[in-house]
Length: 305
DNA sequence: GCATGTCAAGTTGTG
DNA sequence: CACAACTTGACATGC
Image (cartoon, rainbow, N blue to C red; front, side):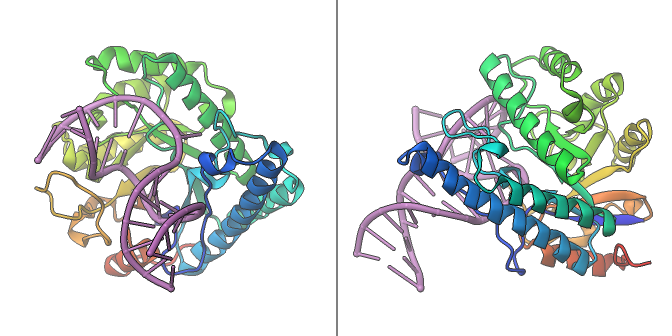
């Protein structure tokens, strides 16, 4: 059965994730910084518990956790560790609640580090920062039992082959908590499904197939072929496949292609309907968009036996 | 209150 | 060369 996933945020439900800026934090001494960060992490960990309850209530099957759940965790100047925070124990207890709800509701949790996290850069400082960010997300993922940390292949730097070989070099050296969760997704400007298949096969990395990116950045494969390749990459590691769907805000011909509020059901690939897979819905209207698509596809609620 | 400018980070393509 | 786009606005400031 196909399960739909919500990405990061809610529009209707009063569940919010708070943020901080380094510029403001740096005005305070370390103790005050940690007190403020602790309050944010505690609140965000509570919100994540509430998020899982709401996702289950709505009948969705997956949730993508926002990367800055612990704001500025890997920041070079104001970064910190969980144990540095005065309310570390309460925060850890909330993460444990998330994990037990995840299991009770049979949800799937994932992370999607932002565009700054990439393993193909020729610049060592970029790679070092990315590895730190991946370590952080893997730490969170372990505590809440999220099985996916999904990234893009990054930049081309004039030569895709050498960029991909730098990526491969980094992947084989990753610590196990990152390595076991890492997935690669086709993007809308540089790396297509066809570009990623060889490295995914060589390293046994599952491929997250984003059909919107594929339509923006085609590679000669049909949607059915790309879907089959994605499914095979997950079957190879014995795990449930992962797909992404969004609709363009201004039609397929507009140049900037921001996400639309809702999914146009005509953008949903028919061959996906009967898959056992997770489909993240990237739409600005958030849970309303997921609800609407579920209704239009006549998909049953997730998690009701 | 509400509008506005700013916020850690990379890379690419457009105007 | 500046800026928007990307998985996603939130926050501080000033009126």
